[in-house]
Image 1: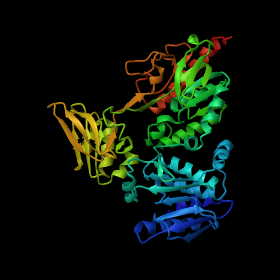
Image 2: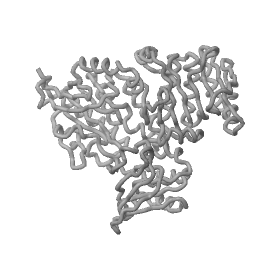
Image 3: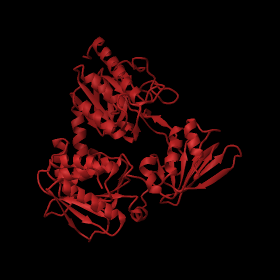
Image 4: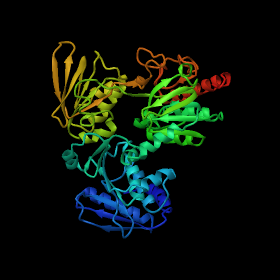
Length: 522
């Protein structure tokens, strides 16, 4: 199952096991079970601290559990944890075997304090780059707390479960048999939802923060770069982020980041966070800014950022790096059927639509690439583009038109997402040449129509362009003194990771220059 190089790496990892680990296999006569047995035998070959037993009572087969001998296992993999999930398997083995997790002591204490029984099920796809974060977070909770258990379910392998629970996007989580959420969630986000007192404690802590020299709003590439450059100056630096990494967390392949031949969004985001944490930076995660008052307009003389929980943070300078989000169609039915057929990531959610009909909205590079990828999985792809012609590169268009199961419709204005109350059944569009409204029967809709800046909360606080982007000068200065901005939320003409990082550094240097020339408010 595993080649010699991977087995050698796995063996070196398993040398860190501090006590025995028991694998419990629930197999049948299928080919996937044979593959799983081969994987488990390979693991046994890598460490004498790992043992194997069989249990044929489980309904999800093939599957296997990771636990301690003599205890009921709390971590289960229903499906082969390969691809992106192989790391999840390694961590499950190590953490069950006593290797300390790489999270803060506060988080560990919070997990261990959870008292109520919590059984999580997470539906994943092996091609999803966001799913491992969720699987690993749940597995860690299960490894630390006997009241928590977690089961990873490969949606492509257990199609009946997917159909029965009407799973239309991954990752999708269930807690104690009831829907818990969909999409990427960090360990901290999951804890915030199951630990009802966590938010109160966090809000109270934020209210007592001292004034920052530089407060960065946003934890993506621009925000991370700004924080590093500010912290290196030896000034008090804080970062407010809804989720560290930002939109990079939703990016699959990155091949244009100079000096790194190729990487993936979550991996880059983790590296960014690790770099920021190497400095004395106060990272305030899971927080969303709601209002900005520049220092020249505040009673205190400091710029003030009000968070959605009501806490107010003060700073001598602020750097806005809130990035952008997926642009939505804004048509009836879209919100109702989000994660129920309306999707944004073809790599993650595509396998759930194997053999089915899907639509892709958007004829740019992202839309055409999505259609090409999906065509290899689904039964049929219909691509809809508003303009007369597709906007994608010629090589992509040629590839798209060579595929037999793809239909391209131009001059199409999407009007409504159709559904049966539970899931998507189709969409309607207006033919801009004839004026006629037509329907297309599909089970999935992948929206690929660009990005919108996350600046709604800044209206009236700083000058915005007609597209909602923050207007900045070459130093990153906004219309308000002491308030700077960087990245995809600004008027920077090119929205690229490497450009956002450079802009973050520029804004941070601009903020430092402002600080050394401006007296501290009395």
